Image 1 (cartoon, rainbow, N blue to C red):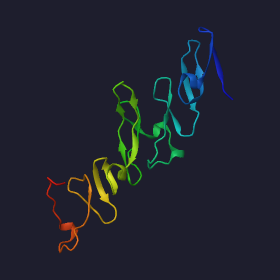
Image 2: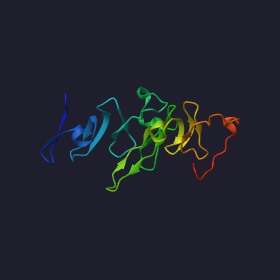
Image 3: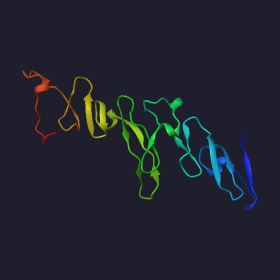
Image 4: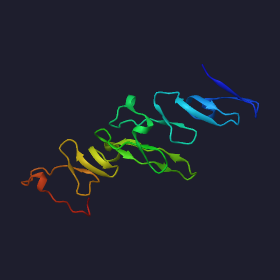
Length: 165
């Protein structure tokens, strides 16, 4: 059931989602200011720290399971967006960013192998920590390198010309 609120000063009716994106239940003052109390979709969580409350996306690939995530579970960045401290294996946190129209886009988890081919674990999208298929992490961490065939040295003893990395 969609709840509608009549605002006497404007003579108009509003739903909670009309006032706050993703909001299911709210209170709307006579002046038309809405305060959200629950989100409409299971992939959203209520940010009770924001003015009037708002619904923000839960953090996929965070070690905290989605069904346990509530907004106050997380620290927030300078834009008030939630940040999970520990991501699932094979993912890294891609920080909140602001586009040229000053719209703030929330941070998200990204797969290590998406940014660096064959990377299993990374600290950022440009720094791999572990490669798959017995590949070696380059000294700069920017890519995964193949072992040298027929080399007498153990791969742990390899050195790489940084200019080629």
